[in-house]
Length: 283
Image (cartoon, rainbow, N blue to C red):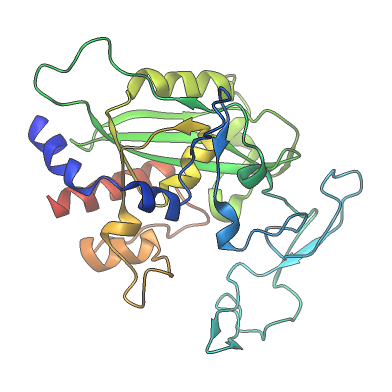
């Protein structure tokens, strides 16, 4: 395991790469628990619905029906192409509808309440501080996008953690299309978000290598500050340039011959396992 840790260390992101992938880091102001975020570079619109881009009342005092497309229209050479989900032209009515718009402003605006992974009391005897793949699933709440499931896989592809937790505020939409989460999944859950994060901080330490696909989003959802990250977005760049992000589904099919995300929504356990497999393939 120490050998895997050493080999993975070669792929740990630089400070510039951490920033380019939206990984949160401590704010230079020195304020305890305050983070610096860089999410605006990916088109975040303040006050706009995540799914349809329409500006709405983000206090959710009055809910409006949201018509949206599962796949956005790609813009190629200045021209919007048809939506991949239904083939309709750009600007047309969405092929899906939901009772409410949803907002992810907390991912970009909520910079308080973060915590850093902690150093070990003493150095590891064999130089192995752990390599873990992490993936989360999140649902939409009044607060924004909140994590409600976390999976952790070690470098032996064993499940270390796979738990649901409750969001901190009222649920607006279970985000099932992407998260795979349904109301019944949380029916008997009692673990709070704070308890779940504390569990994770007991698994990771400051020198642990965390593996993931677009892990910056997971770290922001978890409100964890950590800078030893290996990301499959960098290990398997998009063939048309670094300004584009290749999906984990595409990478898994191309390099592992494995089909994932075949049902409705993702599975954090499956995605974490695939991310680890993709990293191990590079060693």
